[in-house]
Every structure is written in C-alpha cells, then in structure tokens.
Length: 382
Image 1 (cartoon, rainbow, N blue to C red):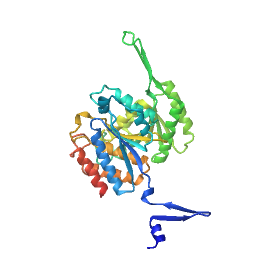
Image 2 (tube, helix red, strand yellow):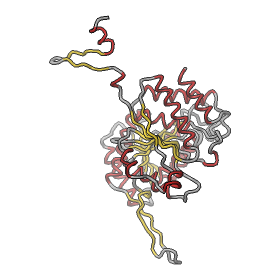
Image 3 (cartoon, one colour):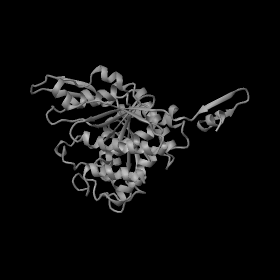
Image 4 (spheres, one colour):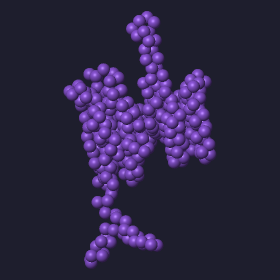
C-alpha cells in the first residue's frame, strides 16, 4: 500500500467548491467525555461499581471514550475531614461533561447536613435547573397497577430543580417559645419558571410520542406562584402549536397516575410537586430499584443518579439492586449524545429484566449486586 492509500485508510477527503476539507476519523480525534464519579455513602459505591462495569463493557463494544475522575464526597469524608463540598472540588466539577452520583446519606450524620450542603449545593452551584425523571415500565417488571403494562406506563416528569420551597427562603419568629412562627417561602422567578417550561416543551417535541405536555400545579389554592406558572405555560406554549397543552392539579395527577397512567406523555411541575409525584412514578414502574434521574443544566454539566438513596442497611451485603445506577449511566450516555452506546446498554437492561431478574427489591432479585452487573455485561457483549 502506498503512502496515499495508507493515509486514506484512516482518513476521508471531501472536496468543497473552493477548498479541500480533510475530515479526520481516527480514534485519536474521537471525543473523550470527562465524567466525575461520586460513589457517595452506604450502598452507593456498590451500585456505582456495577454502573462503571457496564460503561466499560459498552466502551469496548463501541466508539465510546470516557475518562472517570473519582471524588469521595459524602458522609465518610465529612466525618473524617469535616469537609462537605470544597470550592476546589466544585470548580473541578464545573469542567466535567457529566457527573455520576451513587447516593448521599449517612446514618451517623444529622439529617439535613449532607442533603443541604452537598446535594442541594451541587444543584444550585452547577445550576442544574432541570430534574428529568423517566417513568417507564419495562417488559417483565411487576407493577402494582392492575391491568396496566409497558404500553400504559411510559412518561417523563420535568421538575424545576433550583427554586420553589427548596430555595431555602423563610425563617423563624420567636423560635422556641409557645408563640413560635415558622415561615417557608416558595421562590418562583419568571426566568426559572420559563426556562423549565421551555425545556419541557422542547423535550416533549423531541420525544415525539404523544406530543402532550401536562402542567402539574395547584392553581386553585397556591394562587401567586401557580398564577405565574400558568401564565408562562400558555405564553411559551404559543410557540409550540404542535404540542397539546394540558393542566391538572397535583392531587388529580396522583390519582390519574394510578388509575390511567397512559394519559401522560410529559409532565412539567415545580420542585416540591415534582419530588412527590416522581416517587409515586417510581412505584408504578416497579420500584426504586429501577428508578433513575438526571439533574441537568442544558448548557453545562449534568448529574445522573439512582433515585433510591444510600440504603445503609444493605451496605456490603451484595443485595442491593444496581439497575437504577446502571439506568442512570444509560441516561448519561443519552445526554452525552452517545446514542449507539446508550441503546446498547438499554437493550442489555431490558434483556436482564425480561429473562433473569425475579424482582427489583433488594435481596429478592435472584442474583446479587455484582451478579446483576455481570449479567448486564454479558448481554452487552452478545
């Protein structure tokens, strides 16, 4: 082979009208995604180990290139060093393409410290203003809803992630006395509401399933905040004539998610209501063992995690279900626009659920944590 043919084996030339453009297809020019890995507390490190195992298997099967950077954020670091989320670590996280989180929550740390100073701080500082929660029932998975199957349970909740009641507005008056007053304020800005709703419309259009967007609120009681949400929903909605618009109170949403989940395609809501209805969604899709979510800044980094928490009572027992963490990794691949790798991983999860895993509950799967990870890798290699 002469020099020209040797070069063409690695490259292709495309002639333009006024210039010659060389498009490089060498592996050296494939993008390497930098992924921060935060295993966290309890069973977090165990499930993240299986997610990484699956990602490494997918990388060997496709063109996917990932560089993992590990961080020890969580309860153990706090107990040993007194550190929660140092500014230096936060600065590094802002340079990443994505973050894969196991779970934060330690039985020896007072509730509220890790949640506020690590999880919420990550959301606010990285401006992860979208929480994306697919609610999908896969074939072979049990749902407590009678006569409902995979065709009925397939929707997505878009939750505003940085405002509302979780913004921390409020305070005490006469704290500790018989006349004590506690005020918790829901903070909703036009900017925050609009960017969340616009994301939901775009996502609904791109998803292209039923192209129906439902606003979940409480306009009949919470008149100020939800007047804003409703006005913005209709204002932005005029730019999306191809998307059907719907509204339901949060209590009605809970009722219809149980009775007729097939009504929903994409739901958009605020921080508190989103927190509540996504846990209900997890139950109707089979449980926390399969529920994964993303915390997204569409113009920056995104963080993906299993929903179930650190589950410390199962730590080290090889009983916890790692599928939610593996599904979080699959969502991360979709966010990184690695469609081939994401599809391969999703197919492996579906095969395992249909053929091998008896239950999504910890200790009842018929397989251990590591064995489920091995099973996913086996299906990826096939």
